[in-house]
Image 1 (cartoon, rainbow, N blue to C red):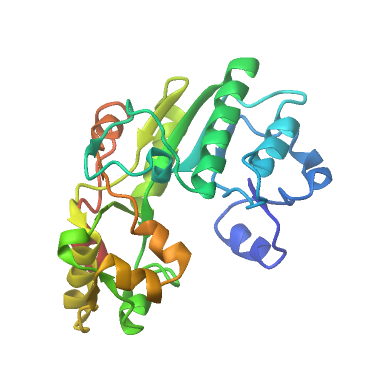
Image 2 (image 1 turned 60 degrees about the horizontal axis):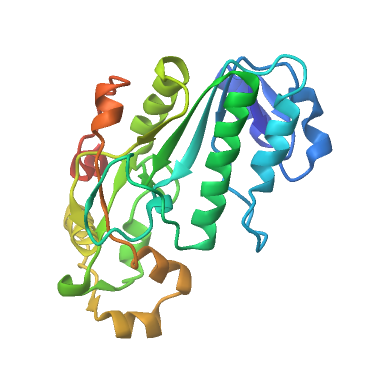
Length: 263
């Protein structure tokens, strides 16, 4: 069963063998039919930016899931942004969160909500900390469009490390987490690639036979790029994925972005 707020997606879901349930996380009254239906819940909805620090979508979902028979297990898809800027350090799940953007603060709040939910209803709950998701078979799922626009990247001396996961590997990790996790665990869900952002776009450009993006200083980039794009260039970390391999037994289908982009 899948919750969707789009009538157009119902046919797609049925074609995949999934029972669609209409509901909108921004309209709490539309979620009442969810109560008591699910034994295992995968929650991937991003928070709605409200200017506050509370994820109201997660709050609405958990409120209805508490009714009648709560789920036995829940997986929440968070973001690697909860770690903030780590100066290129290798980051494991033991590192304290240090959110530095409004969207990361909302994710930290959502993580706290689902962990509390797990304790209150005695459910196995875990959090997946997800970096950049890509997939060549999805619209906008690769850097091609950005390369075609010739969007600049930072010069090498000021560049930041970036992390990625293929959508198929993320899906497999999510299923494993639903059935194999212990309560209140966090997992980094990223591949084995260690690349700085500019090198990632250079690699993609070479694979697509497109020009490599121009390189700018951080000062010049601030004058040309949007605040959102700049925010992704302000945090540098290399995420360790050992826990999801060792604890959940995930075997990456696409261990590097080069393999995933060519798939």
